[in-house]
Length: 67
Image (cartoon, rainbow, N blue to C red; front, side):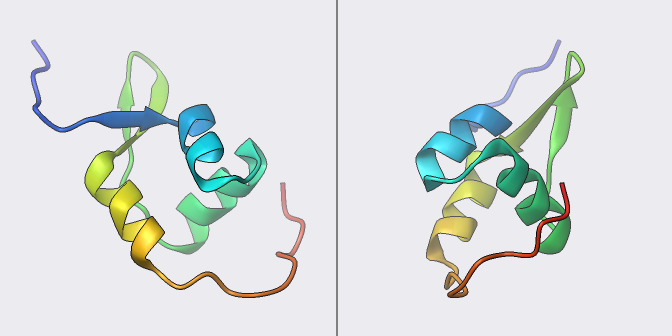
């Protein structure tokens, strides 16, 4: 059975936490090489990666639309 003490965030939860769209979260995952896992076919992001994203400097300006 899957057992971990680390919290995991869904794409929707991470979007809310970062204040961006779900599409932007997928771009961030792809562009910044964010570690993800699939649990029951749901893409989840470990809290350690979420904290790393929050610490990183955000680039100003509008991201390229690639969704």
